[in-house]
Length: 162
Image (cartoon, rainbow, N blue to C red; front, side, top):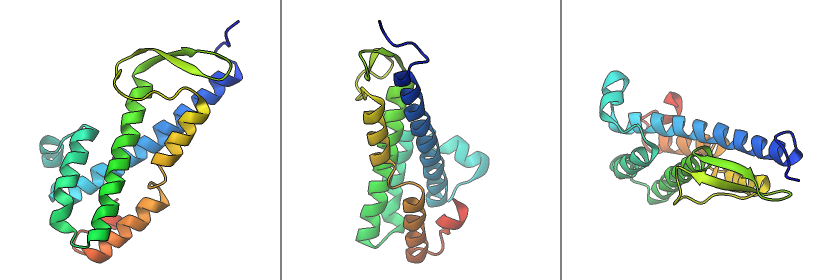
């Protein structure tokens, strides 16, 4: 007998997906804010000109960061943060754009995926670990990174705007 939607496996899976969605949406919002600051665009102009998809935003951010950041260590940390945001949002796409069913006691199986080339976690614990690893640069870590950027390039005021 397969576990139903009220089983503990489903509840754990739903909780892990909820955390992933929360972390990814916060990271995407911060990336959008950073991109607007780096490009010097805001409002309707930014919405019209800048990419709206996360892979496009990460590519533009990687191109614009060296223009504003001269410290190589800070630049490496910011590029690593941008990469983590991209991977976190890629994981969100893989999970959200898939049809899931229980595959055993604790694991889930993507029976259909709109993102078949992306990695699919199998258990709530695996999804939680992957989300935690990718989001370790978010929250307070991103705050610290943006404060370092404000010290290196005070004219940007990234932390104040994010």
